[in-house]
Image 1 (cartoon, rainbow, N blue to C red):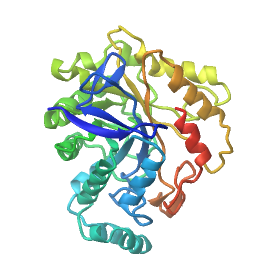
Image 2 (image 1 turned 45 degrees about the horizontal axis):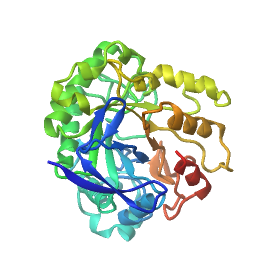
Image 3 (image 1 turned 180 degrees about the vertical axis):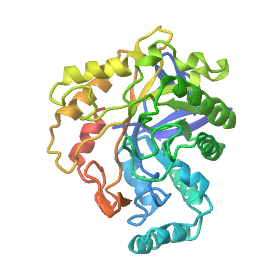
Image 4 (image 1 turned 90 degrees about the horizontal axis):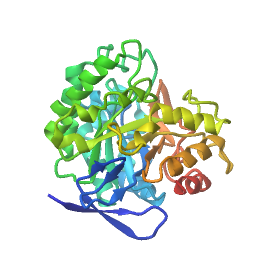
Length: 382
């Protein structure tokens, strides 16, 4: 079934109409008509302890979505935890109370009163539906298993078999969230897992569990979705795909649904932020090579996380300039989709700190306005 989804074109005051479902063609993401799609997204975290998307103690869902649209994004990467799927009947009131977030609970009631006594799962539904009303596409991202800030090498969330990372719970969680995408045609993609890492990491297990997640969960529930596949070492390494692309291991019917994802921060060991050429070559070796045309591994790559200190942005940032140059010029044929980290001006609670400030955030701490229009203008050029 073809469905038209209208989304706001970046920097252009018109509406583009895409036909879903999306798929891949070579190194590009395309809509059902074959038109190339470039997704320019922002990360909206919903994977931390409260089990609901951030910021709802400061602003209404609709107002936050309006701010996202006003910054000219066409997509949101909405993160969630497996804990959400295992405690889906917990109400917002109960969730905040168990964390002693009394002030946040008052704010939540002020800005989103009808959601106080609904389940945390219902809040995700409300966010998804608000994004649909304002024509924003969605990538649902399984960020962690145990709801908390991500990531470290010993947080128990890094790889299958870690303390909190149970494979069967993960499969069930993916299925639970995939069910939410049925008849929500603006949800065009789901990721399998964010930033796999840690001492248990092996390529053998990576292939085993990734194939399980693809075939037993996401494609099993909704085969229309793009399936976003992360690599190893905090999403910094997909070099092994050159020799055995995962699209060669899945059924023919979903081979054109596989999209890889990479992350790139100034500390990502691709090279020092003052050495742009070195950083870009490191990225090309790690995952950018997937954009090479007419190879067995050729596929789209989605830069699902990058970010910088917006608090200190004054108009020039060597790292952001380098990322922007790569996104625009890595391939003459590819349109690299991306997702900026992060939307949040602050978090309900992060590492025990209530109302924790986010220096990389695009919004102010009170989630009422854009922190730096100058920085938004830089993103607009990407």
